[in-house]
Image (tube, rainbow, N blue to C red; front, side, top):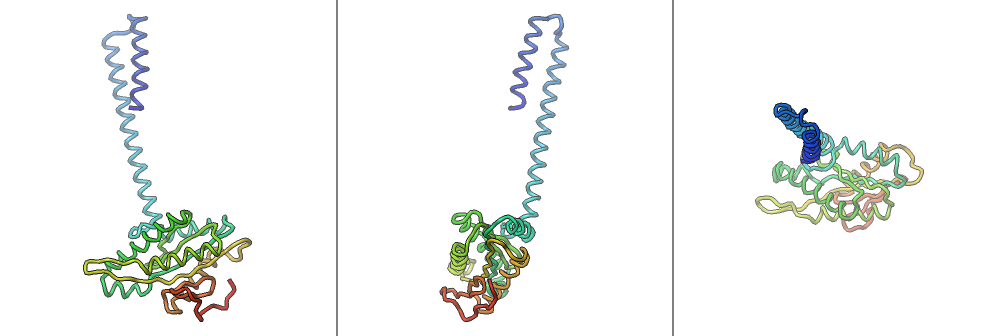
Length: 246
């Protein structure tokens, strides 16, 4: 309608003026040919517009599929690499959380892979909702099978610590429901921070967060390691603190 109505009004006004002022120029055959041409041109324009919209939807869908994980619907490893490199190079304060689900193979073996997939989806959606409500700049990424990451731009140590502890508690307290009941699970977390004049590169920071994650696992799982200091689920620093510098 936005295409046809303005042009139709202008066309009718024009040909009415011509017919009144120069009646000898307008024959019924001439008017019919112009009318049909007008209708056909706007039919073709409307069809072109529909095809363009369909192409845009397909491109948008393909772009989404290349950027997001098909199961959990959070951003995938490729998008994580791009986003993390961009944030590392453009943000003064940056926090990176790496975590994975504890004993995930046991969940698959005990409850089946469908329930395991459901657990992954619940983890991703729960933490993404939390970040959307509390810290919209942060995003969850699925970086591997049961491994995830959260990028927190413009986040200092105090805020990042509060976020990672809240995420750990959320995962520990949420039930995973299935046909025969429900169960709870936990995750191990590693938090790395960068601020001011960063040393190293984005890859080194990611490796540091991943190292802290596995430090949490070695400390008994269900733990958070913040720049080398491991805290249990009860928030007490453990004896597994690293001697590495932050």
